[in-house]
Amino acid sequence: MIKADIKKQLKDGQLLHINKAFVTGSITRVTGPSGAGKTTFLKMLAGLIKPDEGLISVDSNEWFNSAGSINLTPQLRKAGFVFQDYALFPNMTVMQHLKYACGDNDWIDDLLKIGGLDSFTDKKPLHLSGGQQQRLAILRALAIKPNVLLMDEPFSAIDVKTKMKLLADLQTLLRDMNTTVIAVTHNPQELDGIATDELIIGED
Amino acid sequence: MDLLPIWLTLKLAAITTAILLVIGVPLAWWLSAKRSVFKIIIEALITMPLVLPPSVLGFYLLLAFSPQNGLSKWLHNTFDVQLVFSFPGLVLASVIYSLPFMVSPVKSALQQLPVSLAQASYTLGKNPRETFLHVQLPNIKPSLLTATVLTFAHTLGEFGVVLMIGGNIPGVTRVASIAVYDAVEQMDYTSANQYSLVLFAITFIMVMGVFIYNKYQFKSPLE
Image (tube, rainbow over all chains, first blue to last red; front, top):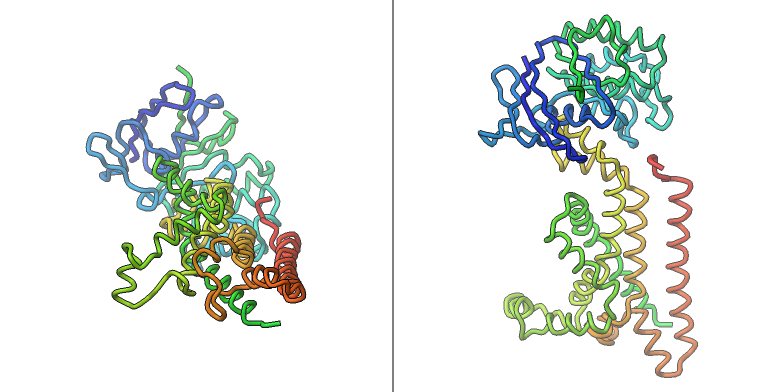
């Protein structure tokens, strides 16, 4: 169970306050208008942005507690993170991305098959299509076998057919890993039938 | 033509560039991260050689390197190392003088990398050092090469600081730029022309090489 009760003053002055519990293994869809703080919320969970105050706990571990001055680094939290701009490393091939994240070759092979990138292992991001880049970003985040997977617009560049297949495979994989997923999406219908919970940010 | 000044110049440039690669790149990385007043002061100090007249910098270095003062006194008393009118002094002065040529391009390149690259590496459990070596540094190769060549070429052409700190001791501090000046003073235009041509050719080939390399081989994948 992930519990987050955090506050953050956004750049435009508005206060972002999230108070929500995420059940282990659940898939939560996060929606809301642009600039409401969806990405900021994900980055606060990952430890990339520090909340102004509050508490983030995962099971019995505190990741952030402003009262107790606890703020685990992203390295210690190891939450899988899929960035909106993919944040792929231009100098690394598909295989090098996954090996940089983990040393388990069998796991890497499994991921490559799930993502349909097994025939592109020696390609660098520049030579991949937008959809392939996005899939690589998802696979890289999964490579560390995270307990929490945070995704920022993870399927925006993937065509419907590929998305359906990838989602089906991912769903099985995430269920097996018992990973809690929190996915930001601008499309309220995305993840219909897959999401088990919902968080709307920026609507009173 | 006496080739010793050319050899001394190349040796000085190579040692200066090697030292600046070791200290300048980490310094650029440190400066590229979050801003603070302290960092702004350090960056301004590093940039000073770009705007100060070389004679002013040379004058202050001459005072600092004097065996009667601080570190120079300790070096002189402990290791019998003399910084003024010596090759080690020239190297130290060149490192200070050429520091902005290494630091500025590398710092700018690091700041232009998307922040999310380092953040992605952190979420994979990698520390800042691993992130720098495996993610950031390989993606600024063109700028790193440019900074290296600029530093080398700038050291080749150094004159004012070298003259103030090193003087004109054959085989010790008489580098090519000093040799040109010395030859002109003695109305030996043939030697001056030869030294000048060699310096021009070396720097032109290096700068051309960087342009070609960056354009065809190592165009940044982020461009």
